[in-house]
Image (cartoon, rainbow, N blue to C red; front, side, top):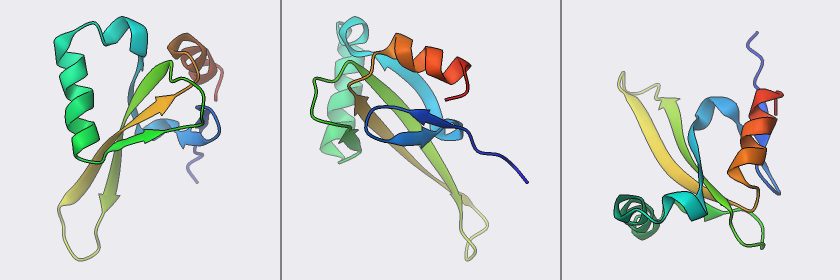
Length: 97
């Protein structure tokens, strides 16, 4: 049986296997490409916010789901804004969640 490890990202936890990357909002949004990436995902309805505090980081996720009807694998991407700093999330991930 495969054991799933979860990462606490604020008021919720996320399975580590779904995380593509964790980024510091202040350091990465100075680049136009990052701002455009976040804007496009917001327009597509793929951005979620965790909690009510000011977001300090964003997490890019991918959720692979196998469909019984189709042999192709579907992938749903998303962005989660978290009030937890990227360095704290990295530390938590290294320590198992």
